[in-house]
Amino acid sequence: MCSGRVDLEFILRAFSNGQDGVFIGGCKLDECNYVTHGNYDALANTYLAKRILKHVGLNPKRLRTEFMSGADGNLLAEYTDDFTKEVKALGPIGKAEGMDKKQVQFKLEAAKKLIPFLRLVERERLRVPVKTKDAYTQFFESNETNLLFDDIFSDKLAVSQIMMLLGKKPLPTSDIAQKLGLNPSEVSRHMISSSRHGWVRYDTASNCYALA
Image (cartoon, rainbow, N blue to C red):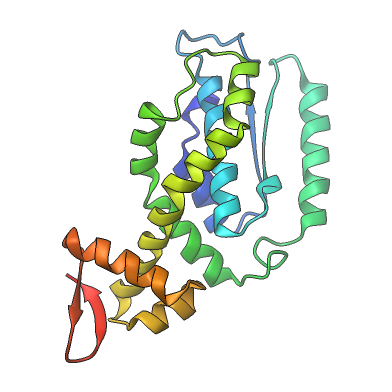
C-alpha cells in the first residue's frame, strides 16, 4: 500500500487502540512509482499527526516515518530496531505522559472528529506548493506554520472535547472547565460560539449546557 494512503485517522486510531508507537515506511521521496507522489502526503500527515499528538499531551516521538527503497532491507531493520528501543524508553502510551487509558482515548477521539476539517484546512492553508523534502521541512517546521496550526486546531479541539462531554450529560461551565483543564472564561467563550452555531443550548433550570 502506498504510504500516502496512511490517513491521519489511521494513525490516531492506532494510538487510541493502545499502540505505544506507530512506524510508517514509505518509498524514497522523488522515487515514487505513481504520479501522485503519495509519499509526500505521508510526510505531510506525519507533521500534522505529530502536532496533534503534542496538542493532546502525547509525545510526538511515538510516531516516526522513514523513506527507503524496496532493496533497503537493512535500513528497515535498523530503523525499526531503533524506533522500538525509543518507544520502549518512552514507556506505555499515556502513562509516561501522566494520563490514563480513558483520557488518552477521549482526547484522541476528539481529535479524530476534526480530521475532515483538517483535510479542508490542509488543502487551503497547509498545502506545500513544491514537492521537495526541503520545502516540506521548511514549511512544516516554520514558526509561522506552527502558530497557524495552533491557532486553527486549539479552539476546535477544545470544542470537540466539550461536545463529547455534553454528549454524555448536561454540565455546568465549572465542571467542563475542571474536566478539561480549561479556564471557565475559555469554556464560556466556546459555549457562546457554539450556541451561535446552534450546537449547544443553555438550560436555565439546571444552569447547565446541553447539546441542542
